[in-house]
Image 1 (cartoon, helix red, strand yellow):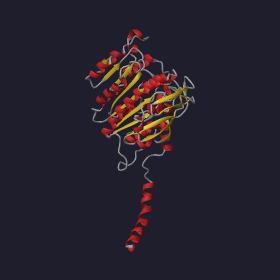
Image 2 (cartoon, rainbow, N blue to C red):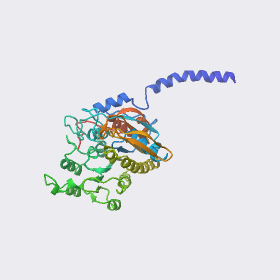
Image 3 (cartoon, rainbow, N blue to C red):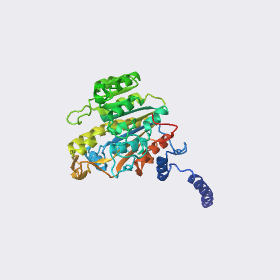
Length: 398
């Protein structure tokens, strides 16, 4: 027996160095430094070898506008241990500064997440010099995937606009609505019908007509959205912006996500979806803790549905993050058993702190650790095994 053991040990000593040398040359995941370099230059990083990493077929990026770590923990406490944030196997942090400010706004923050490039505050889908850049929805649309977004703000607000528009100022709503009417995404759900009406516009144009000519079914209520049969859907729930979920906004975030997934998941090539819980930010701007908690509870319900879908599907990567933190929220105390928090805000604006990143599904391990917000998108494409042309002049934003 001793002789057999010594023989096996000698064999292992012979094999191990060669195995280690071979595998040292094939890292499972590109380093953070390499990914950051890719995000800065527009270079795409090749994915890990197929034998070591399952590719994600679908991607869902979820943004909690203004949602920092304190907001997340306030939600965890409020859910009394049943928070959907606790279901993510991997988490990290994102550094949110813009190209010209320590503290970002939603235009630059949203652009960094969905386009993978830093820009100046108030810019939408363009570099600081005004060069248009494509979002992940545009890139994946061009690669044959179904695409869409769902938000609880106007569809023309900074975060959703970052997925399709290219303007130097986030409040150019007439121009942004024209860009949306021509972007070609399959599903677009939110508010903001006001700027789509020609009588409300300086140019007198009618983006609704453009959408209809492009084959979209357009609905204006929750029930009509739920009953829609078309594969191409635009829902504009309200004139400009919704009210808070409490005391009575319809469950548009949950139902919108459900409808979007129902439509997009039918594409055999896969899909890409962006979902935003927009009014977490608004509540924190108002320093209104009950408003914030209600929006977080609404976000939790949507998150539970998406995670259930991804868990059952097995081919969907879900990444949750924020464009920035709002309010400088501090949790001074509370009651974990009763699900209550004692909240204090130190500003009615944004703060510059890091925000959380959560990931679930194929490639989720890539999002652990501290990362720049522009590193999220290359990691998504890396996990999907797809080409990411962040600023390729031969593949311009459309």
